[in-house]
Picture 1: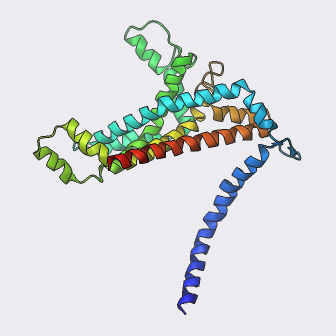
Picture 2: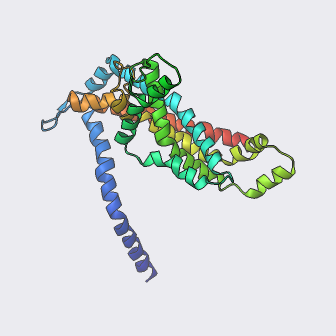
Picture 3: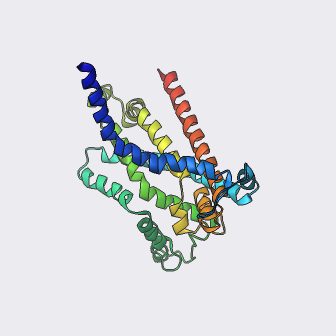
Length: 295
């Protein structure tokens, strides 16, 4: 009887899980397998695939634009990840304080995260627009007479993309840090205060060690998100000036859907996929080792 009840419960669990498993297999597992298959073929929509072996990967390796786009992506990962983590932590510390109005400030900081990327890009293109943009108008009002072309200069374009990305996404990191801060027992801070520890010593000795697991999670998530950079440069600079801000995901999109080279685009996608996994794995191992050493 117990055995029959156990089987019945398992069946009910599988039935509840079935819709999710079907959708997951259809929209996640199948595209991954199909993409791997296409990376070894010459493929166009509506045309029978032709097996080409490693030819797509050879084309990818010999493509200078691929290496430039990969370099642009790595550059963005390096400049964006520490900034987004540091600002997210600072914002979380601010809204976790006992100051009045922190609920309103929390909502204000998180609000940009719910905007669509097209809205976000429109806002920042208006701000960085030369001659008539908001930032240009402010600079003119304080006496700066030289026009600055934020979106058409190599260095400034990356800065504009970084600023827009921080404004748009840092609220998510703030929420994760805030959840971690609120899990720290107040007794630890009270004991530190009795011992005469100042704010900096309290932050180094109590807050940071208590946030280790959250920091590991945010570093890995943020690195993966930065590798997926696409919408900001695509909508704000078009990947320019020239191709200097074109990330790999945008190049994959252009290869696949504009040039109709689905096989080459799939091979690039898999290279990006494995690079992202390697980065995430190395970060996880690094932080795990640091945690073991601290114990």
